[in-house]
Length: 270
Image 1: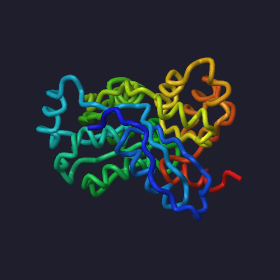
Image 2: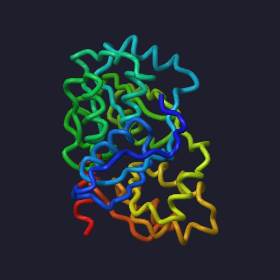
Image 3: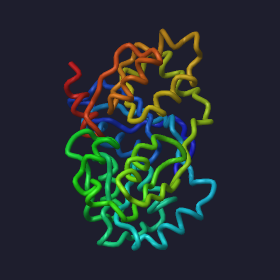
Image 4: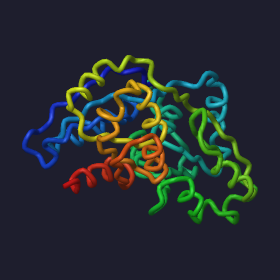
């Protein structure tokens, strides 16, 4: 389980190609730590301050009931790395083993990587368009494949309904299971504010719209134009780009999905 987390940094390799990049990572704690390790190995200074807190669902009974009968399903769709973590290995427990016959889907490489880490040997994902639309374009989720079959979607407590609604239209019986609860952080942003005021953050990684939306209220409104909105935001999807720009960020760069997309964009920053 991920909880509120005070600002933390990982030691960087000072001579790497990302030397001079002071990257604010807004992901939940577990994936943030992996991103931090990767960018630090290339010389960046990662600064972890999760602006999206992941907690167990208020009622875990539906999740447990579905896992107990998961053999009955044709497919399981995990909408995010947190969905995979909190459905299969909450609180770093021994990962639940999914049946080999189950079709397992991820919307992008980050979720696929998390599923692989948890022992899922075969994960289907889009070749491009790493989102719900990309998933729904896969042959194994078309009407001919899913009609009359059962699908379970593991997701957070809110979010888009597209996967569920379209799968139902295609004739599937769908169970949408809340595997985790998302909320904004309650941790005071004192350390983050100190760094921003000192000009020590020059890049922000945003891998969800909620993460960037939750960041802004942590900074006093009177200071945002000076210390926050000029910072380059590396956003992993067009929807996140739109959210960041609507909030007031002036330099927003769309990256490919996951850590690989972030690192590629940072390497090309000049």
